[in-house]
Length: 471
Ligand code: NAD
Ligand code: SIN
Image 1 (cartoon, protein in one colour):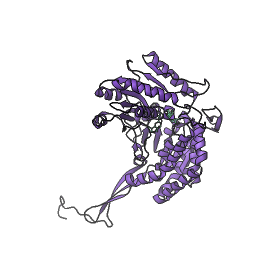
Image 2: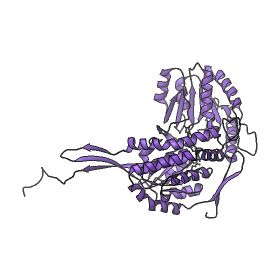
Image 3: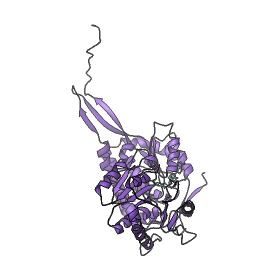
Image 4: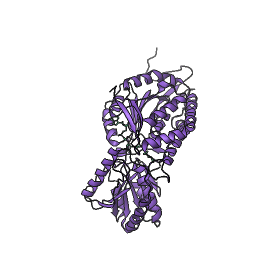
């Protein structure tokens, strides 16, 4: 492996952006192991101030960071800017979350003693990142992990290593010790080596269910290690009893096509009330035909860029053809205007008549449409997935939302809002194949430290009142 390189290319142009030799998991874990106790021993206020400096470092480099993320992922510059803003905002959110979720608590107990609840860091945590938010999502694990007093070994996606490397440079520039945040450059092999490393105390993962399930199996014999899995979704958006079809179409398009559909929370399935079908599809066709697909810096600004690489574009094309061959009816074909580049125009396909609809996360701008006449059946179709990340209802009727909320299975359930755009200030995670009940964002504090309960008294005092012979 040592002579291999990870090469990052810009999806929009194919130009080489960054290259570096693959790293070594043993070396990175050893460095983190050596450093973590010193970091854990620092007061929380010291770690919080260091991470506040990190936010300032990112602020100062915001333009360069935005440009790098846009080039490396292909996302529009406006969207990359939003990602950098989320990286900055994460620090204050995580400091508040640490205090809220894992603060020290004392409860007075009888006879001058007390009970204290405090939290301790796990030690060395591995973080594996995805490519769609190469800075914001790993940062969503790393900031809470460092705040809690852990050291981190971070392996960014092999598709977006440059953004990951810049993130690590920013922690270090802010004063996080070099040993406490290590960069492991590599692909799946290095990810596997890191996950299997005996000297990590846990793994915080954001990525596909395919990888997450493999990690879950690999950790089956390690109950002593924390494993947090943030995975994908096959998310439904239901449109029912709404008077404003134009707005409904905008919400559907935002849900399905923002980030070229490369969001874990993107709507993959539109379930629409039969009587609204024609009007909604008509609006969606008009709207999607106006969507600008272009390179990140293009003027006028594009709504969406390319997908991450040609392989992803090829797979999406194959998936769309498979839907067509299995009974789907194209509403809008998946067009790829430049053969050699992964730009895709938004696609929609009616799969109402299809038997055995595949329960797959098609991670790109493909929306499957299902027509339905009964609201309970709409919920049943929405729930017909092994995943359970996000779900939205677009409707003017509160009682329908009550039914939807009560019966839908997802970790994010929205009303007259898109399926995506989750807030960092709230817990974020899914059920089923979308996660392992360790939600991230605001609740990341929970998996970055474990609670310790102590019964304490200033002086030792004890007596046994029952069951002793006179002595
Ligand atoms: P991926 O699973 O292919 O890769 C994620 C990371 O795991 C990468 O760093 C990769 O190198 C590493 N990896 C791959 N195989 C591995 C293995 N066998 N062992 C250890 N590490 C391995 O995911 P991706 O394609 O980069 O990201 C897109 C996926 O992420 C989508 O499924 C999306 O829904 C999901 N996602 C989830 C969330 C969430 O918070 N729930 C957020 C964003 C993206
Ligand atoms: C993502 O993490 O992939 C998207 C989050 C969101 O937009 O809800």
